[in-house]
Length: 300
Image (cartoon, rainbow, N blue to C red; front, side, top):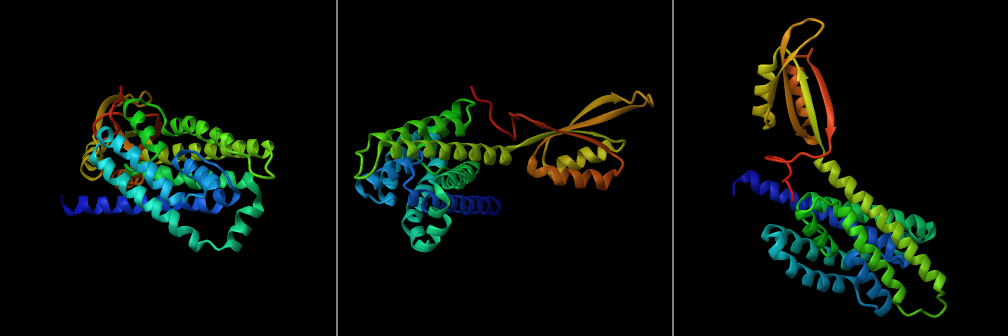
């Protein structure tokens, strides 16, 4: 492995760690103080915490370990390494993050703002963390693993898969014994808040993933098409297609450059074209999906 690859891997783990921290903060700051139930293994762990006072860090690790052993062969060793890392780090964060959140801060930010706002903000924080992990080839474990297994073979949004699974997990909280002073209405309200939570989480996951993988199809009209095409191949490392065209007003024949790129390469394309031909005409369009070499794999 060369230095560039090592740096890329280190960067991925740093980004995953930041995403996991965001995920745990969403739970510890907004959800757990309000006794809210979310989806995934974290939601199951929250139910175990409320019912049996089992620490989330322990139940989260044990449940994920079982699911991870099932998924290792399906998703590959590379996925397994990053997910093992994510599970361990998340379990550690669940243990240490609450120590850095003073009760007065939680009271002011979370409890005083009501369960509705906390459901939304908690879902956004958690969804952002999961989306960041997905974009780096990792996962926070649990139902995320199931979602990635299905997504590997079918073009189904990971956010939608997680949403369906989480609906059942949150509804299962109704089966818990009713605590003294707790009405059935309170339990139903908790389930409804949970559904709002996973809706916000699911939407945020898809938003983060689609943002990181968004692609554009660009048509470039320029008399200096040869220089621009060579620069794109050399500096952007993307394939270029030349098409014949004719300006109907001038009746002049010309070449049209067509290239498909990721969103992260857009600024580089703009700079290259402007440096070579400031009078070039460009048409940029967003595409729904790009499959093939250098992009996503075609799934059955």
